[in-house]
Image: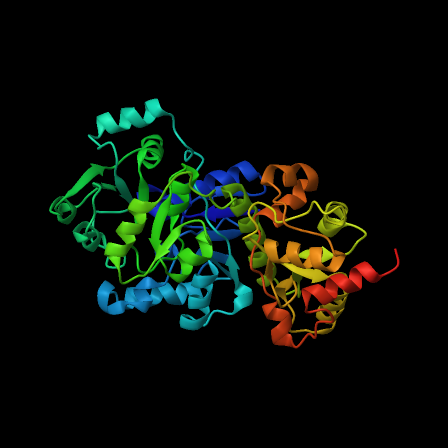
Length: 453
């Protein structure tokens, strides 16, 4: 598959540039596609625009667009983008064969605001770049000396060339605090006029990792986000995070950070100053995972553009004692030494084997079934919920935590499903009227385990 990839946003210092650079590198390492850096994809099989500005109104080949957020549409009065060009960009997104979004929050916005069908949207999270890991005391001391940083400080990271209303950096600078505030990012004139802050200017990734590592905490005052890369970068460097409680951050960080009321920046800073190390672990999703999921979106886009009806099934953890993830879990749970994996907060898309077969037969008989179809139960659960219910069905305790490394050695390739997780729902099956035989997890587990083996 030859994919034209618009690499122009890779020069951006903000999160969109990070996304483009990291995804290109991971796709090349993945080796499943031939990646051509271009925004003229006429000689390619498919075109991927990783930003809305590159979306083509009349693409010559099937197009995939990454939509990072819809803030400009939701808050037009603040962003003043209402011209014809602005509207044409979103029209181009609506015409894409597949739209990649970083969170279910953005997916919901896209379905509601742009009326994009759920089966044309792929939720693919982002991840910290490989450079982000806890740095040594010597590296921290070096950046502290070179950038004139204080011994203890709060840090904020992002674009400072233009003021962004949702980032609320100016308001953060005025909030009451007892620690110095360090702002990282190339500044515009407005940022240099902020009082009581320390500006580092642009920094390379190794220095940024050391600045994260040396900070008391990352403070993240955004009142709207599509994903939020700085919090997971900070967690990857071992630094705790305080952020405002907005839907996307709640979805991505899921208990890993301190969430504060959006309207109380003084409280946000107070929470940041009260945080202690060690910080919780960051989400386990990697850019390698993102590249695999993006390749699946490419395949789905090509299939959707074909005249042949193609159904691409996305199967969750199949409940069957004869194989798969459940069969590997059962011996430990029966001994009473099972429990939640890698913290247990990640969602586990599950489905009974009867419904896998039933849904496939249903799709064969329904002409409207086409493209990606999630073969998952309509009631997604977290890994902790799955462990608790399985323990109850087996009448065994199920509270011993299982580290991610142990799961990888036990499950092999299936470990990604168990560790990373995704809140997948069977939107297409439900829309077409499929009736699940086993929609409830506990009843499904009892049915599977009561069957004679």
